[in-house]
Image 1 (cartoon, one colour):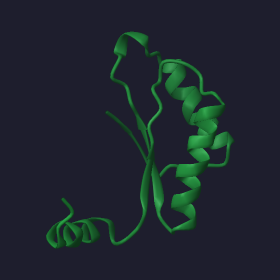
Image 2 (image 1 turned 180 degrees about the vertical axis):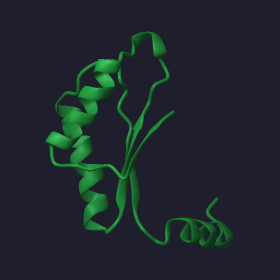
Image 3 (image 1 turned 45 degrees about the vertical axis):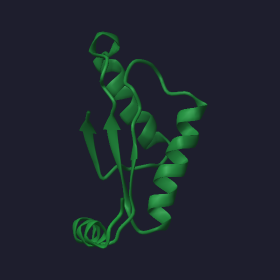
Image 4 (image 1 turned 45 degrees about the horizontal axis):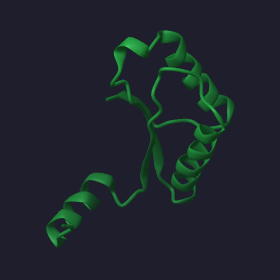
Length: 89
């Protein structure tokens, strides 16, 4: 439940900025659905004066290779987006 106390705490942490995340799984190359999600997340945050976090959803280590991490970062940049930071789940 979003109480007044939680809202105040949230606004203190974010400064009232919109923060979105783009959470691809690094187990393959991105597809058109990823591009749509990127444009929605990065675009909305940019228009609202906020930022987007690129958070690798790396919950299946057996299927993940460094090649996919690097390619995803490259494709995010190639599509004109710059994440505030890169994190891992």
